[in-house]
Length: 452
Image 1 (cartoon, rainbow, N blue to C red):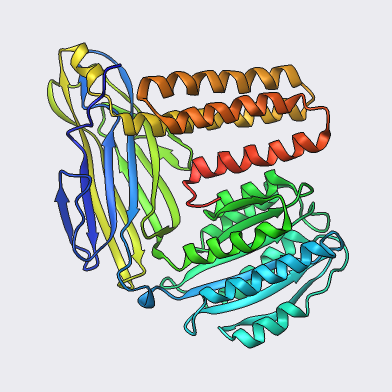
Image 2: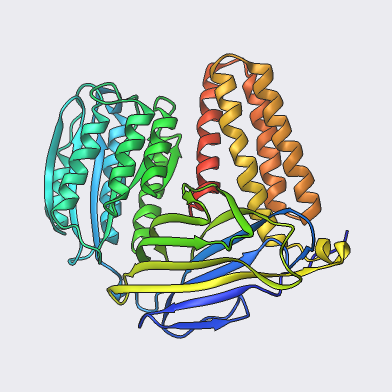
């Protein structure tokens, strides 16, 4: 197989803590004092002149390492815990233990609240500067109760966060639930709208679904809309690891309130953003992220169509501008750059210029979209049609894995084949588990979540 060389037009732009810019042609370059690095890479280095073509642009934001974790941004966290009747016993015991262990990541400069809910909402610990002893007493006092007013619990958690809401704090709700929302607003669409509202306030919601009884569509939409994380914890004993991973990630935040603006020239038409939500108006694309963490890259893939009228020579596909709150320097910052290609005559040269990195990212995002179709078909009882979609996804990923020599795509292809088998599983619990795993995997791919 021909090994594809990386694009030569990769631009690496570091947003310095001072707000200045340094531009380098090497992806591996690390700039002194940089908190966020902007990586822009077109799907191929060369396009063929005189043809209308579809290609991709990968726009990545990478958090630089934090040299002194003692100087991290302060956290503003609301722990929102389900205490409905179904949590009684081992589940609640492990949830309380996990919440106590998560306190290890908090510092005196952080603010914390504890909200619990069944059919009503309680606030055992109102938003206040971190007080370990007080929080441990509040956690120990949680008792299981009635139904599940999830919407109200999240809303109350957001109200507590607003008491200390600042651009320089990492604002996050950590929601744990094991059951279906059955008191108050309870549909995935209603929780998605709540997530969008909170995301607009730089409040992200991480949703942790425990066991097989919760609504994964609801939990995923809430997390996706607010740019939080989503985790499926099958067993209560997994909660400690999940809480540690979540609080550990929050402790590594380097940027917040990120706005990405992409402008294409008249002869380049933006078609869609893969994975993430974005607004496309004419030749301008706007997307937002709530938080970015050290040593993590979050990206979006822009699919564009180029006109056959593009002149030969170097051409700009897109100009990218990024604005964000720098949590290390505690001031606004920005970065910008361009995706450029060369318009040539050789089709062979164009095909050889394809970027493996961009196409692997685009392939997994395209494949993830098929999950929605397959799960909807299964929900309607159309098992054979659902199996066919999972099979189509697996075949597509296998072809792309071979083309781009990607173990990641091979693993995703194998998982899709496992989902195809699970559709016809004789025990309902097997499909419940598989469905939750499918939604979690899809979420992780779309949002580049750093942990499972």
